Image 1 (cartoon, rainbow, N blue to C red):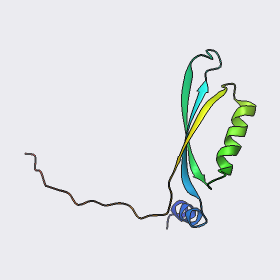
Image 2 (cartoon, rainbow, N blue to C red):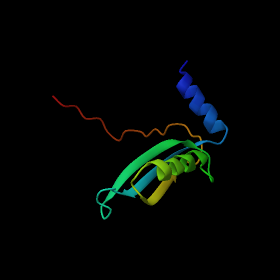
Image 3 (cartoon, one colour):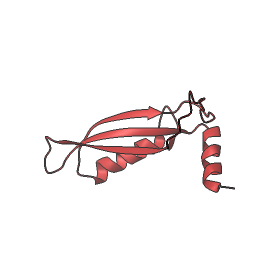
Image 4 (cartoon, rainbow, N blue to C red):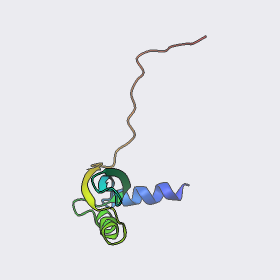
Length: 92
């Protein structure tokens, strides 16, 4: 049994959801230029303690000043989605 999958499923049952943050920051040497960093982890809405901890670390230890953070998250535990295929194609 895959313990990583089990741990993630247990987190989801406890209220954790996959959160993805798009972090836009100023380049230290060229502050007029912006760079993007994508962070993804399981976290708890609406407070997002893991993301807040990461952003606090960023502000204390990374020279690139934060510009903005855009957040997306999954809402609920759900099965994988499946769709019926509309046709079958053979290549020879």
